[in-house]
Length: 228
Image (tube, rainbow, N blue to C red; front, top):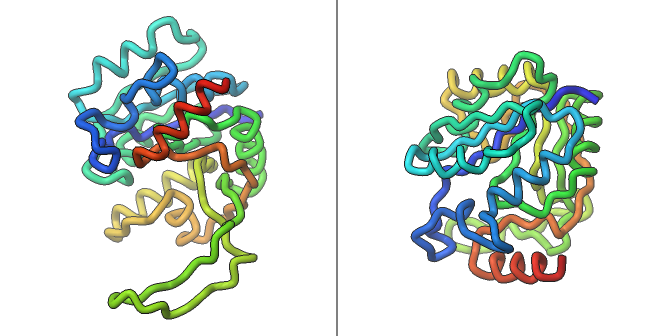
């Protein structure tokens, strides 16, 4: 398997959660959500680096999470930007040269299964990029500014993108550098790679890989941890 570096942006706030504590640092199951997420990546063979992008206020807290971690994995903390895209760009500058692949993963998706990370890496090594996702289960509506429905796209071809999103290192760096140069802010990492002609394949994941964003998500996460 190709050598992997993972970037985990953890500079978000807790506003939508209704908390003063940023979501990645909320505790569940005895550890922060971020610690649970990091632990899943440490189970992946050929992981060589973990980079956390966060605010300076949390540098010491994040560095403490690295104590006792495997010596064959490099850990770095970088300052997060105002937007997620800028946080990842800052982290990309620190990716080890020996890393063939770079994964970007939400700090608040602690239920990712290591075998799905490996599958994404295998696909990215072959095609250039891979995105974990699930087929859309709800009917999707396109809505205009006045909340009038303008279109109902065919659901059969629609997927909900998750993370990790994994790419060949040079491809992702090129996509980010061009986006910065052209003042483009993408909705996710894959959209930046797609716009420069990079091939990205969808990898089917599972619905347990939820993103803890709202209070209801946190309640579900606690139930999952209790069940485990």
